[in-house]
Length: 323
Ligand SMILES: Nc1ncnc2c1ncn2[C@@H]1O[C@H](COP(=O)(O)OP(=O)(O)O)[C@@H](O)[C@H]1O
Ligand SMILES: [Mg+2]
Image (cartoon, rainbow, N blue to C red; front, side):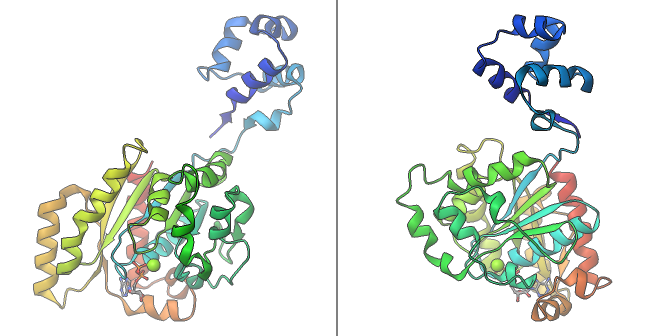
């Protein structure tokens, strides 16, 4: 996808105190064409663009992005611990990366399970530091050993991040402010954020910075009962972030051997949440835990495992719902 940063061109023209008419005369380009270009209603060929940029003293690369990816920000949320947030993040991200999509994982949980599952060491340049210092997250990105897959790691010191956020001005927008420059760069297809098991100010921030949320849920009584709380939490953030959507609820750790619980929960979930549920169900698979024990994503540890196949199917659904 090609993106033209027409606002930047307009701002530069205004900073030079030049009218559209003057620019049209100086470049020999039709005034109407220029007007449409500056409002993003039309594009132009590269030759014209070069002439305009020359007049505006801009490098073409500053405004013309021929390989622009429309980055979607997805957060994986549930205040219930152990429902599979971290595993779903890792599985979906790996499956997307395998497909050739560029993915950035952001670990927002002080337990740093996501960072560990990719064998990423502790680092000064972690998500907590970026939040506290309100720094552009681009500088905190590290490569993983997997192609197309980068990460901003978490740190154990992030346990108190929530309290520290309280004293900040516009405290619900901090994460949005630091992650926006990454999305605007247009390098990644998806940014996937793993959250901590709380309905905290930090998670409010993360959801407030997202385009989509995914909610993993275990088919078990307390988990199903608690699902409404998460859905309400996300819906409560929608007035702050009107573009926010719940991409879906994914059933995780489904165990067909435990028929009574699994099937009763499944019926209840279908009844209450209908088409919010992803079609793909992630079943219990011990290979996942074995992979995590070795600090490797399961798609790498056992590419042919049943759960790896399920993550690939889920990733396809996520792509369909989040585009
Ligand atoms: N589908 C699954 N099959 C087997 N074990 C799973 C599955 N999903 C998650 N687990 C295990 O459950 C535990 C909690 O999962 P995790 O993804 O860390 O949840 P959360 O991030 O929500 O706390 C981990 O030990 C993980 O290995
Ligand atoms: Mg987790």
